[in-house]
Length: 446
Image (tube, rainbow, N blue to C red):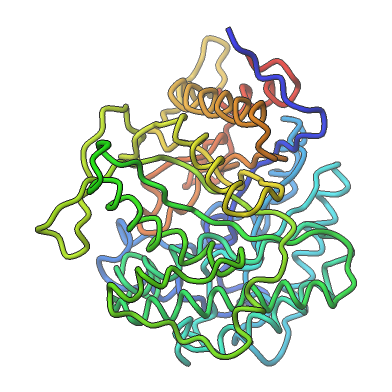
């Protein structure tokens, strides 16, 4: 049986995001975010759930850090809530927001856990949305100022930075499909958002280089690389179309390849770039982050506007309805390594939603037996090991997620955590997958 023998310097971490776990939505000067507003729109979020309390990590982070330390977790990827730093998006800095993240990063370091900070994980200040959001070029420059503040005030404690998390979701789910905040359905608005998100990333990288702070900076993508349903040329073309739209629109400019112009022309879309933008966006990054959960299959369909049909697959699915495809994970890692020119890669999210139940075991302890999640994780760890053996420069892994949390439009109905959250009492209950991950990190994961 193959084992999980990873390099000694491979980083084993876990991940969360501010809006999903922090709570304390109206405390210590935090401003309103687009997700606070979106959660109040009828029918947008399951059961009308919101992030007002979430996992209350804002108050309970010492407990969560203790649990991480006991599992041997080496790094914690969290996100900084822009509305905690700049409640109005720009203008006055909120010192209490900075103080919270200093306290969190200090506590992590004291526990021997490396803090890894994402600057933007979707909680745009509502005040900026009121002025155009990511459709507006000014939002990119507001992000630059916010990033500069974070580097200056937190850069002595945080040495690994991620500019954006999954800009695909921010642009397409938020501005084209209406599934995420701000809830718009305009493809032209989405393309404007794509460019301004890319520009914001580049401006933040430039600001980090100028800051003189030590460390590294990169970006996290949820690349979408569907496999063609058959070897037929049309199905291959359908897959390439998806890669252009859903992946190269983001990776291309950052990696110096530019936008997929043929795709844009075929759709009659234009990017609002200005002279110098591409040079800013394509500055060298130190690493690329990959969020991988699943791989799908596509076929050519003349009856569809985009000629793409997502076809059924045979694999078992998670509670999100996503096929479990560990070999797809390896294909994604290969593709991203080629696209980025072989720079270091971190898996910044990977995990499994499952219906979890708390039981009382024979000793009277509360337990969660999540064998399906363990099987998912193990198969994906094996795929990572195979990718490493191929020479793919994979440097670390951040399991999604430390805690069950607010799963965006799904509210609290989906559980990804290796720690079970009782949302009524806020009790944390480690699942079997928590103990499995502890073993993997310790070198016993077979």
